Length: 186
Ligand SMILES: [Zn+2]
Image (cartoon, helix red, strand yellow):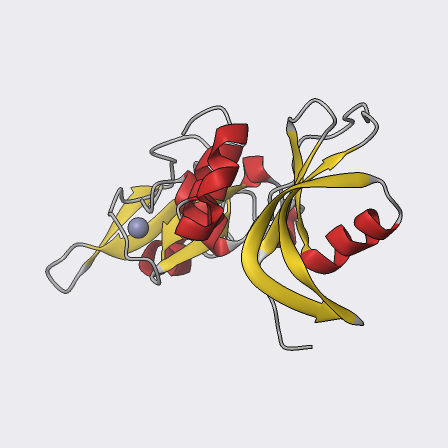
């Protein structure tokens, strides 16, 4: 089996999105007859025998949703949520120059949660180190010296918009265009 990485959209019986799953997990649901395939990719994959790769599957029975779609708290996803802007100096950052800062540092009991992570440039992250909001950090004054500045957030951390994250990661790719109709925005 050659490596195949396209994702499969899992819809509830009412066609609301539940999750984004791997083709292997989709195959398990298909073999157990838990889902119906409503869209395929053009690719064919083989798993014992060759079959056309599923793109969207729908549960045959409605499940009450206990959780919303889980979004991984990754550096990229936090940066997408925060519009690639450092929360401490407001600089717009390149795709590869963001870092995740824990607002309440982990060493002081801060947890890895959407409300405790924020995008920071590398400089601010280093200056902030294990300090907390309201503490004072030393930053460059731009003239080779240092100045002291109170640590505060220029915007608040929020729970991310699932559509924004999925769009940046998946939905904007042409092969997933037919997924867009199942999300609020297009
Ligand atoms: Zn910064």
